[in-house]
Amino acid sequence: MTSKNKGRRATRRPARRVSAVPAVGRLEGEHNSRSLLVEVGGQIGLLFLSALLFALSHPSLVFDWGFFPLAYVAFVPVFIVVHRSSWHGTVLYGLLYGFISYTTHNYWLLNFHPLSIFIVPVIYAVYFAVVFPLLKAADTLFPRYGFLVQLTIWLAYEYLRTRGFLGYAYGISGYSQYLVTPLVRLSALTGVWGVSLLVVFPSAFLGNALKNGVAEFGDFVRSRRFVLLGYAVLFLCAVVYGVVSRVDYRDSRMWRVALVQQNVDPWEGGVAAYRESLDILVRQSKLAVEEGPEIVIWSETSFVPSINYHTRYRTDPRSYALVRELVDFLAAQDVPYVVGNSDGRMVRNVDGSLERADYNAAILYADGTVVDTYRKIHLVPFTEHFPYRRAFPWLYRLLVENETTFWEAGEEYTVFEATGVRFSTPICFEDTFGYLSRGFVREGAEVIVNLTNDSWAHSVAAAMQHMAMAVFRATENGRSVVRSTNGGMTAIIDPNGRIIELFPPFVEGYLIGDVPVYTDRQTLYTRWGDWFAWLSIAAAVALLLLGVGRTLVSRGSDAAHHAR
Figure 1: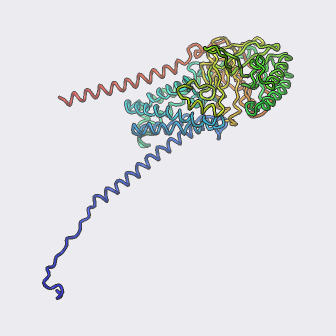
Figure 2: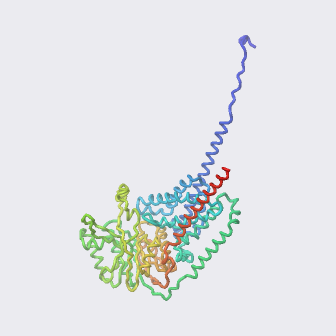
Figure 3: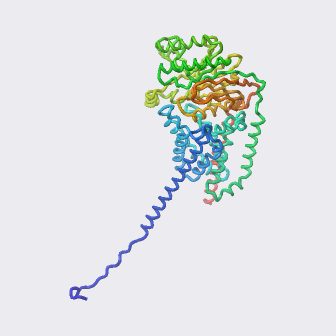
């Protein structure tokens, strides 16, 4: 000991102990966070995959005609995500899936209206935020056969979303099969909903088989092989029915029609655009008439200025001059014309004041005079019709500021008659709803004639998606469907759902074709309507209630047992 330290007591400080617990906790927390991120990322990736498969199974940017086999597996990732998610997670994942699936499927809405590309995906985000928890409930309440309950829930959702003010039929699973004509003919019995069942079942089955990983896939399939066999038999029966139920219309009357496609949107450019459109319509109609059609059909609002209004109230000299020119042209024709037009008229309000009301209409002209007028019944929400002006004045103002054209809704299922053929004219997206075409057929329509303007979309996929739904209107009712469009798809579809004539999209010209006027058979769908969809709704509700009731009884029994 040195002299400096002499006399001092040496002390040794104990070494500082550092606990390893906080470090381990931090590591575990970081690991859990990474695991959660990986899990959430995987779930989101599955949803994006499902949205992509869904979009590609229908006409899309990649496949103009769609790639229908993808529809059978499009929702496999959805059912996996539903099983692996928490209850709260299903709501969030449902919101995400609804938004991305309809943004990719209906991307062309951006050209329709500035608000549409936001409104439609948001609506479907809300829908799926409800559907995903219901699918989760089926998975939880029925561990063994929950996929069958999920199937009924999906079918109920597909139907219910076509009803009411927000009714919208784009993206129904069954529509992806519009080229598989034997399968499409099942709709004569069940509507499109029976085809949707056949399409969605593989996704529900495979999604549940893979929900716990590939390792359990084989056991799942083996233990439910009889359900799989039942589906195979059902699918085969549907195809066989489609083959044997094919109607033979060779002895039916053939109705020769001329469908004029002007390939210019008359709504863009005011009077100058009206003039250009009229010039094209007249020029192409004169050429078409030389080939001897029995009737000439123009597209939806092919002529914009209201013929009725400007004839009665000559408030706009330039519009009246165009109306006068059109009326003189029609008076000189030897064949009937169907003209898409805005039917404007003055109506008296309850306070006695007069106000102009406009209807999206189809007008039949023969011998230069108006024979009858059909006014569109089912209007497009937000862009043609918004009945909640008082409840949501800010939204109404926003729609008006974005140049929305509001129409009044018609009420009558008009059936025209020309050259011995009775026909009705659902306008634009009215042919996407089965109940409307069914209503026309029940009123006596022998042919469905759809007038459409899809030129605003600048998209072949949009026009093809629309036509795909029209195919089902033919098979559901066993009637031919004629589509006269502004830019596509102008077509003739026979009662078997086969596209027998198709004019190229976004080309000016006309299509001459012979339409089978087949009326020998009334389908089950025409008689009973959407019975299969309502049966699916009833099954979904009953099964969910049964599952909840069974669970409550089981918990009550367990509580009583523990109490003893």
